[in-house]
Amino acid sequence: MATWDLSQTSHHVLICNGGSCSRKDADAVTLAIREEITAHGADDRIHTTRTQCNGRCEDACVVTVYPQGVWYKEITPDIGKAIVREHLIGGNPLTSRAVYGYADGVFTPTGHGAPGVLKTEAARRKAKQ
Ligand code: FES
Image 1 (tube, helix red, strand yellow):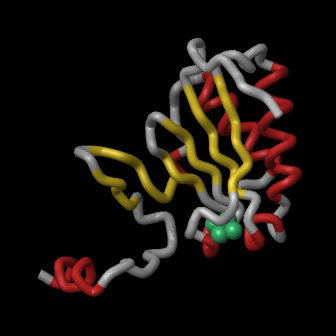
Image 2 (tube, protein in one colour; image 1 turned 135 degrees about the vertical axis):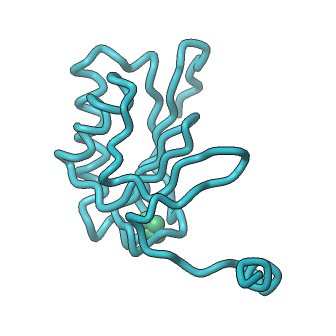
């Protein structure tokens, strides 16, 4: 158990460790991301959390980065390290693996991910308009 002081934290990285992502090396992805953060001396700036299913299993292994709201798909340990170097340290999201960005109050598909299913009938009706 830990209670971290997050006052120097600039990014929160959620690493899905749900069932589908675990079958795609989520544990190794988690360890690789954390090792790369430590290697860059960035443990005070970048906080990571293992999560249960994020609801995007076709994209396994899923990693999300906040506050930018970027959702990444098919993350391997090497790609996870690249997210640390290029997005979290360098400030440039990996566009080839990003399936959603965040703009104007909503998540915006990049076209790289599975379309997915809208959650409610009302949302499906709205999408048809
Ligand atoms: S198990 Fe990772 S998105 Fe479902």
